[in-house]
Length: 329
Image (cartoon, rainbow, N blue to C red; front, side, top):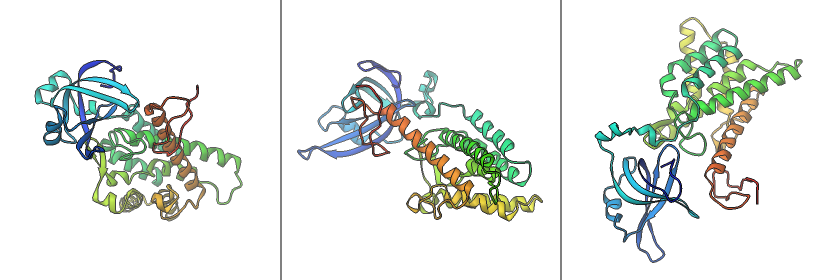
């Protein structure tokens, strides 16, 4: 579907990502469905008197994969499909190239390379010792999960590998900013801890491994994710790792652990965003703005990619709640 041009008809596999039952102005029921593959979402109506309406109502299940023959159209209401044929994916479709991953958005970057970059950054930006051991140990322990983990259910980097893409950006930015400020203000007392900024950049979202669980459509919240969130669970994971490390004979000093915990609990800054405390150390301030910048940049990138409004400005109905200037007249 992602490779199809407007007006082109073809056969392809897609995930049914959403199905809503709605009413027309006359009070008649219809269905709004969203089919997705790795490169495109298509949301469109199935009217109540259409030939596929009964099957849509009774048989089509959100989270299931389908093989479709459809005409792809780009309209003023966004991409749409005129479905000619549709059936659930069968086991034999694997021979024709089907896999669930082909229907899920994914990072443009190689997950294994991103993971290796983060380990290299930890080894470069953190002196060999207990803090480096803690960071590398937590990442290595969860490597297999991190390679495919999304950074969120929605809004930013909400795709396979999105976690590593976001965290690599944040950690790199935090490292760069911390180095520059440490050089500019060498007499700061106490000195800026570059190592804590790097560790915080790498681990600021580690609690998302407990906040989210993977689904066919990307991710959803666990019970603890809904009730506690990733910030406090991230602090828990760091504390647990530090306690285990102390028992193993390589304890992390209390001041460093406190500063790292503060980076994690304050990185979203505001209570309404989930942080119980604002950034109160230079390292926490740097990680907060590195995180916020990367999240919002990815949101803007997505808006520019997805918005179909004519003219130099995008529409305002997006995650940022504002128009984005694309240029031209």
